[in-house]
Length: 151
Length: 151
Length: 151
Length: 151
Image (cartoon, rainbow over the protein chains, first blue to last red):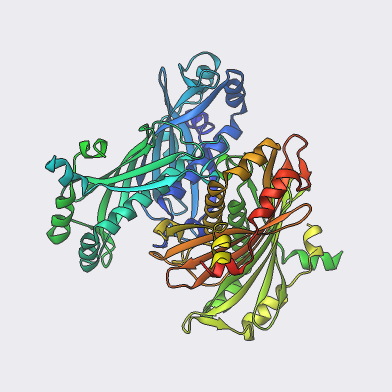
């Protein structure tokens, strides 16, 4: 279906296998490590959308995370093959929200998170409104959460 | 004031200095690293409350984190002296909430988080209701968020 | 050339792109992070040689690292595409040596290491001689260091 | 004894307790994590010798690690109280060597390492000879390895 195809192009996907150094003493992926997996997902998203990064750079702005709300749903263990899905699910006047899902090969949802970020004006060192070309680029990438389960 | 003294005994405090390996490429403490700082805070809390850990152990249970909601409020940089404050702010039938503040030496709030955990029955490998001696121990440690700003 | 082909099957290769969370405050990949990259390389090596792991398991043994000697040759920065090459370069009576190279896309050697490991008898909790089927499996995988530059 | 006192002032000591997030899937402190413990030791050393850092800064130079040779001697586990000892054990024309010991509370040597570093001329982006005030500062701090076992 064309709509789902259009959405899926804005959900980045990266794969990783859980290794011994990802685990904590309980044999589960450590809570903090999931944030690295999700950061890996955001970098993959940026790699796929170089226009966004270029416009951000030209505007003298950087993304700054202000909130992360993460659900830990199932424990991942050594050898698990995980996919991290990453997309933007909302843009408001001064902030935007990025959504992440981490899904095990058998389809189990391991973790999901909403990450709220603002734009930092790097010269003024303060948050800037989301406007102009950066806004257009962000808005054009917005997907709804259904796009994640369609992956 | 006696009430604030009584509360403060249930807020654990641990100190750390930000080092080069805590930073990311922007020269700021990386988002994932704050979770390690907060985990350090929880371990310090457990060290101060061995009765809780002993009862948990006897009940064949373990704490499992199911949600973390973290606000990143200010960027910490190399050399910053941080305090991590940790306490329990609520206990319901099946979950409890732990609160963390990370405060810079100058009093600036760097990050704060609410972490929701459940009790895992390790034999059944499923969440257990919070009851009995573990419940009593947890409830006796509950503080309100004002106890954190009093530190 | 058939010899180099024969050797190359025993050099595992894994690729990664340097991301912001790999860096330290100088904008370079942190010294400790390279050890995670190399551990990733060892897991990839094990994935390619399941017979070795199976024999180790049947012998009730585990690999334990006793020494790592790593040269840091060039600083890797955000966006660098790295390859980690991993192979076994020597087996003696009681220890064996694994070699790692981390090479940037432009061919620059970023880091190299020799990692010495022993076999731990997990029941006795002490080092065991390298013998029997595990020895055969390890010896059959030995490459010389030229096999790394041929990749 | 005055000699050992004189030496001990140049061996920095930092303490840490092993926590769940330091471990890998085997319940042991992960190989890479020891490098963070040792980096923590170097920062503590620098904190105690601000003159060295000031002279380095004035010379437009930075320390760059070129080799690390680490022996893993015993596995540290959750709850272990560790001390990291750090000192400079040699200075040659173009490089110097820093030694680290990680010792468990019961006196067991957990890990030890020699770390070789050079001075990077940050303007020229190349290694510089160790000379002048930086050399004097480094040489004045040199201890021999016996100073570590005296701690």
